Length: 318
Image 1 (tube, rainbow, N blue to C red):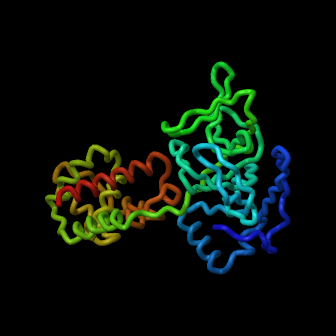
Image 2: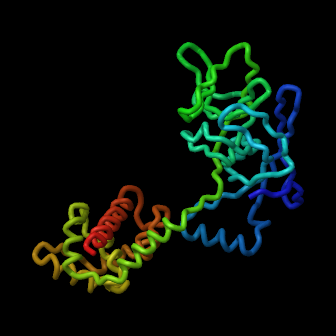
Image 3: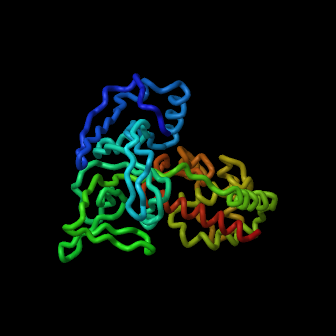
């Protein structure tokens, strides 16, 4: 989100200077000391809902934005239009982010930098081998990976086989203007066809009736993954999500498992399974998140893996 710099509600800017050849560029970074004070009621509500759902909400700050762009390809002139600003996560400011530039071209696609992406940059020439840098070459600028070889040779290396590395020698006027700290991609969108294909698949399967035979087959596939009785909660959750049993009907679920598995049925306790139905486990398994789960680390992912595999096994039965 780009905003004009004339904003009075933010604190005084932190001023940094970076001298590049004959030009001194002033980088002003506006820090938000208490973002919640300036939030609208709507933004406060959104932030509160995100935090309640386990999302980590990061405050944002504004930094100067070079809108002309820097080429990911052959070097070009760098723009100095800083009449606009760009919002970045506040933690980047702690890492000394001074400004944001727009990348153009395709020479860095191997580093996940695409045409139009915004790059948060720390001004300065203290680059290490492997850093992605904004480089000045004989009056032009480019974005490349900085590299020092075993012979102490210095290179600017593209991340696209269609471009060759640039060797830095004493006859070239080369300077490192900054090190890229983070890649800020353009707003992502998913193609309509991809969404429609996924939705049609779910709608098609939702019209089909799940049978006990289908559940038996799915249980056989997932059984090797189940190591504890409580992990049967994942099977229960999928059957609830698919409407086969009602939510909180743990006794019905236990009876179903006993009927299907006979003498091989585990000794499940409805109350024990009910204790798992908290936090995000009360929601459909596709909404489970590690941050808001009643269990942590590997145990959480074990439950999620069982739910996914059991759900997939049911889908294959249709």
